[in-house]
Amino acid sequence: MDSNAPGNSGGRGGLGGFFGGSGPGYSHADLAGVPLTGMSPLSPYLNVDPRYLVQDTEEFILPTGASKTRGRFELAFFTIGGCCITGAGFGALNGLRMGLQDTRSMAWSKPRNVQILNMVTRQGALWANTLGSLALLYSAFGVLIEKTRGAEDDLNTVAAGTMTGMLYKSTGGIRGVARGGLIGLMLTSLYAIYNNWDHMKSSISRQAL
Image (tube, rainbow, N blue to C red; front, side, top):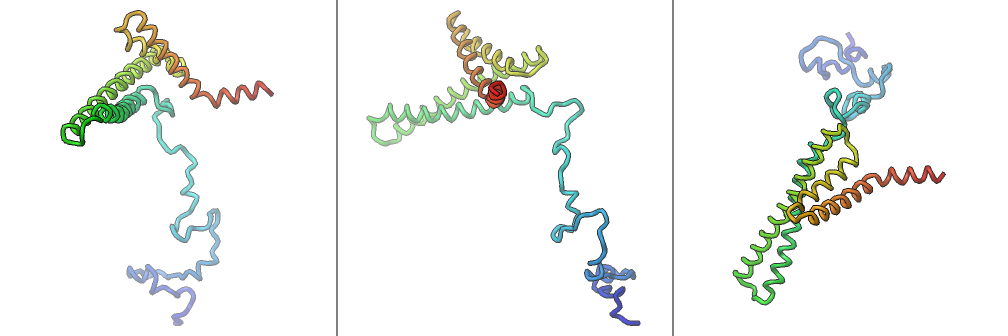
């Protein structure tokens, strides 16, 4: 029997010969002309059909009826943590500035370094506590308003910011409440305008046409 027959070429060097199988082996030359019906060419690197690598569906699996965007309760943790970290960083820089300014008449020594470090720590904790408290109040009011109205829009943002300012400045009397509410209203209104700026521009451009 001819050992160079096409049906037996590469049989001893294939996987069947390696594992002791008795089936015929085929070389790449034998399989080169076999059409891949209904399949795209295989990748020479992955040896899989590239069609299975295309993501045509959603990347994340959501529960039935769940929203694709995070609600205020989920964003509350990020908001509070981000404000605390931002306040700590800003307070540390402000404390460093104040410490260098207050001790500029002193020579570089251990007492001066300790005084600067104390100022940095005090200001960092103060600003982190302030911004963290504001973020906590804002998030709590936002979640409460969202659950009460049953809707999530910019009105919740403006209302939560106004109520946060009023409560935070409530120790200053009527004027303090009014001033805090006005500041919260202005800041959240500017944020709402910035958040919807692209939509507003597109609406204005459509009206102009």
